[in-house]
Image (cartoon, rainbow, N blue to C red; front, side):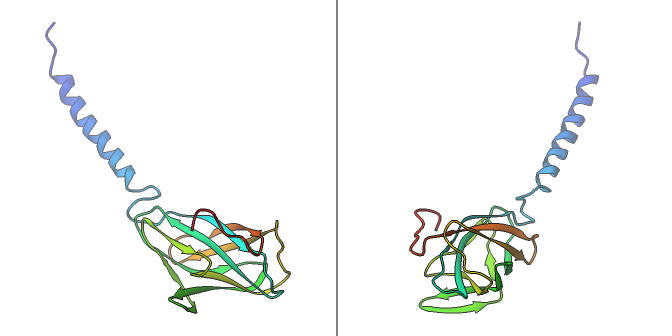
Length: 158
């Protein structure tokens, strides 16, 4: 039997259409070039020595192709949580910090950090402090920050 070309002619457009649908799906999911894909790692808070203030550290990871901006942080544990940027030896409060596309925003001891002010109670080692990170484009991200010893230094992540 001689194969016909009729079936082959129908198969080619069907394969092209299927490939186009698959490629279209690649651009609309998380991590695409058009949006940020945010997660948090390496979060910790050294047990504060003050009854009213504490610092917090974490890394915001963006696997997506668009940058975003951390605009605020809220927590029921404090009257306010502010963003602080360290440049050289100078620290200042800022209203937002960039989270680059395919990059990260790092808060670490001696660098950028979260400042918890007007603590409602003093967090102790072993507890967790819940925060909500707010971004310019992405939805909020809730993080539970473990309270570590006052002298804790992370081995990895920062």
